[in-house]
Amino acid sequence: MKQLLVATARISAEDAVADAVLDYECVLLEHRRTARVVIPVFMNEGDTYCELILGRGAIDGCLALPNTSGRRVAGSEDAVQHLQERARAVREEFSGPFEDDWYDESTHAD
Image (cartoon, one colour):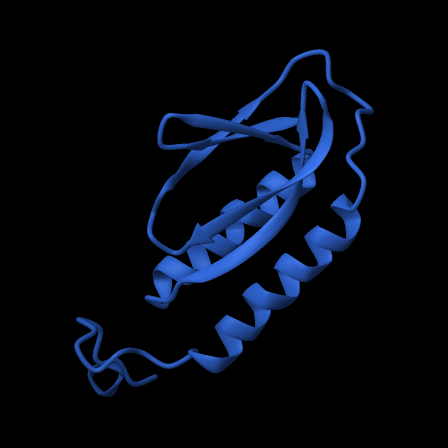
């Protein structure tokens, strides 16, 4: 179990979900995009869902929680798959450099 660090809040999700959120956030930032996602999370009262806007750099990182090994949150496997598919789609759709990108491919020929 990891906590996503979002501004002053901490959101507890399975490790794989937290990692997929961070990966997707990085892809969105790299390609200057935003996205709304809903992920399964754990709260003291039980499992629920959290809605996040990614791509604004609001996710500061993750904090691994001790003594949470084996804690499962319903829907996590589907969420990971969905986040990975969305990240892959962004990479494929926006694979070229931006016009104002500092890297000019024409000056770096093989």
